[in-house]
Length: 377
Image 1 (cartoon, rainbow, N blue to C red):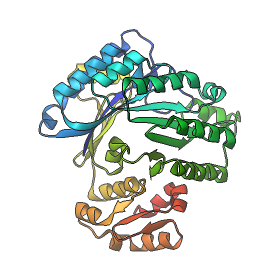
Image 2 (image 1 turned 135 degrees about the vertical axis):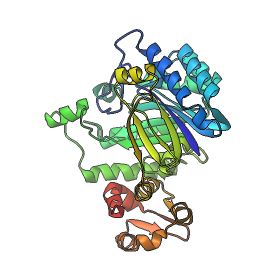
Image 3 (image 1 turned 45 degrees about the vertical axis):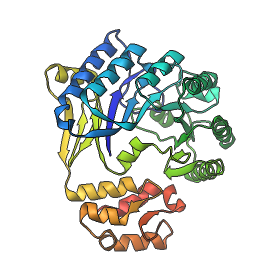
Image 4 (image 1 turned 180 degrees about the horizontal axis):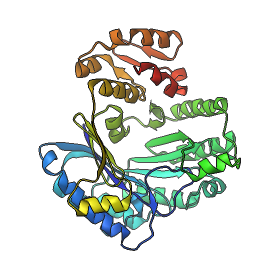
């Protein structure tokens, strides 16, 4: 697998929980300058990938649906011009209600996008306003129905729980409404306070309280069971899909396969090297205009780094680590090397194994971050 990630850093408004590299547009020419440089960055890597095919493309942000029809067209024209894309590639764009129109959806379909990821977060209009979203539920529902009318069959809906002042019953109502829409994929995340966000400051100013861990875990378990009842398989800690609609691009990350990242703040993993681009737009643009890759960090991973990263990422998925594949990939005996840790976690009921795989139990998924540390030397 080989993925292509393209970062669109622009937003109509920064959400109160968001710590992604995103910016509200302040100048008319901001998007056009960025897109011109994004295309130039594509050209920097053209020769490196001329013998390889990309199995997935993901436009993330920010809010990629803030692009107009012409901008969507020119970005994809240049993706296809510079890279070999597999005929059956999964091609995703993140969309936010309030920036999406039927005309844009038609353009997205025409350029080959075959998967939408729509950020809803909650169906409660008061909560949407309180977390800084620019849309209401009715706008989302119209966008979703327009997408179906245009012919999109693979649609993810993002929702969140443990939002400030959100009751368990209010979350259940949101989840029920989303399930009734029958999307092919649902991503469901608990609110995480990130430094530098508006919510982070509000929390430390005592403007709201967070759910305790016990309630958070109760909501998580309810979500898993409810979605399973309605035909959604949990295949990763926070992701659920109908059969055959797992997100191929994200699986590329979780299986530690190679991906090329383009755009301000994007990261990539190519062979044994990991890099991150500069986040600041002016610095990103300046480097590219000077014919220089806008890389801020570049590192060669040691075998130990790769093994530990693979453990952390692969255990996020419900299938866990395929022992035979892992041993071949890294030329180690996984069960022998980590025998003490594996035995300890199995005895605690936090991981389990069968003939082929080692994986989290449900109890283990609830506290996954603390367990993963056990595998780090």
